[in-house]
Length: 326
Ligand SMILES: Cc1cc2nc3c(=O)[nH]c(=O)nc-3n(C[C@H](O)[C@H](O)[C@H](O)COP(=O)(O)O)c2cc1C
Image 1 (tube, rainbow, N blue to C red):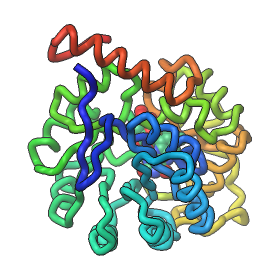
Image 2 (spheres, rainbow, N blue to C red; image 1 turned 90 degrees about the horizontal axis):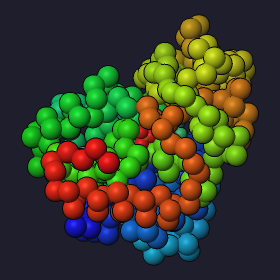
Image 3 (cartoon, rainbow, N blue to C red; image 1 turned 90 degrees about the vertical axis):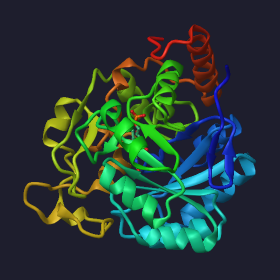
């Protein structure tokens, strides 16, 4: 059995795979288009870039692919509304909103006739999102890279959320292989969102230094609070113990609506720290990664990654078990 399609509103992706949005400037047009060309949904990360830069990347992705292209934007960023409105004006296919919960986004997307899928980590927010008009929800477990809304594993969270809503549920966090996809879909999820594995691809816009750091990573840690007031999962390195050393307060770029940067204990700018990592200054950067980063041993093209997923998935379906060890 081949991988099923993923239906969200009037979109139908050939593969049930969303490439998670990765800020700052990690998932841009080249990565999103490559995933869309393979039949998945490619997301351009909008947080930390300007609306003009986002518009350029949406247009570039459209030139590179006829597949499904969306954006991901963190609710916490100051330019949230402008970024979403830019994407809607460009007739983006889908808007995914992470790192916070916005009520406004449902009305904006509905008026534009565009699919909307928030990232949630609790039954309460899943139900609320459905009530406000979400077309799907992405459920992130504690294994996910980036900001975290829970300390529960995706395995524990997923069945409860699937029971709680009728809209398609997409699972995220710690999915790195075709057998993971198989097992996740067996639980009743309609799709998966994958971050780290796609970050570690040839088409990702992370610097070579950042890709090398991911490759050498032995594991990940849940950091203390980020200036967004949420914990996050990032590379476990000695530098990370104290968080990035970008803490000079004068470097604030006013990126968040409400920033704990002014808090004495959190002395770094989140967007600047992510930007440093993407540009290769890993010592002063925050390198988000999923819990299973240490198991990924290569930087492949998106086509190679997806071909592997298909092959591993096929092997599992031939075995026909409810849980496939891979
Ligand atoms: C480097 C990196 C940057 C991320 N940036 C964002 C982001 O801007 N917005 C967001 O909603 N999620 C972000 N995430 C989370 C991913 O979209 C995805 O849900 C998560 O990585 C899934 O877990 P996995 O990495 O184990 O596959 C980021 C993750 C990583 C690894």
